[in-house]
Image (tube, rainbow, N blue to C red; front, side, top):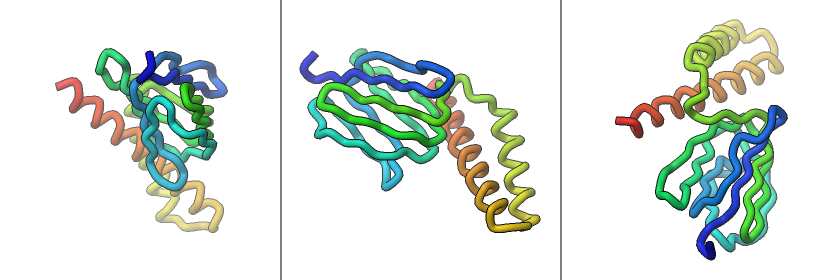
Length: 140
């Protein structure tokens, strides 16, 4: 128990994960971070990306977060995500459609706000598709 950390991943839809882990990796706004037991307290924002949780059993669980915040205490990590999904729950068809829609919006380049929204949507879709590809490789 001394080398573990409790992890809670929640979003507006509800709790996605709650359990113990030996290591957590998250996409902080300034760069990816790794968190182990007895980590120094930290509070930072998250960008859209992949959260990896290494469990005591040695397996790795993958989650998509669409941004949010992470609070780290010596024996607790809380991820408060804008949106969160288990990697295996990502809808590949929806991610591909979102990617295509964002690429088309970027071609039109109507206004700065629309370009920023299209870039953000493209980034979210790209992260989801990369996570699905990684999940496929892990299953082989």
